[in-house]
Image (cartoon, rainbow, N blue to C red; front, side):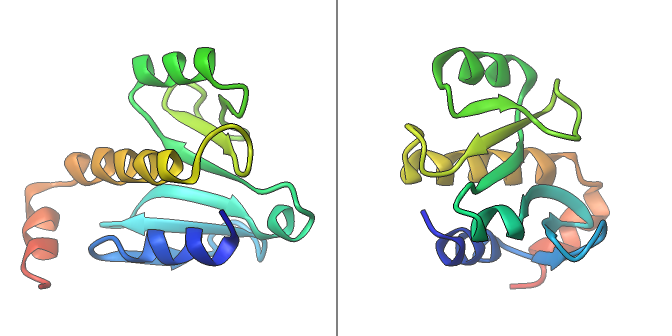
Length: 122
């Protein structure tokens, strides 16, 4: 996976916005004002890309046990977030599924009002 594919895939999700809330390096994707994916642009440029994604806590543990390229998230709640090493044994297809899972977890946590607003943006 390259940065362009990651970027375009995240932005293809409904009502996603991109931000740099922490610094000029950390690209954050949000839905309804809440983060679901973040990644260091410098790491992509250095050839060591990774992405932090929200995950169900039990599933997060299972993924970490089964994939060397999935670790507790750097600088995030290690219970709810994983760091996925891009171009490791984790396939691009599976990374997209994990992005979908993260997006869906965040979307489900939004208030009814925000979900309704997003639903009416079509």
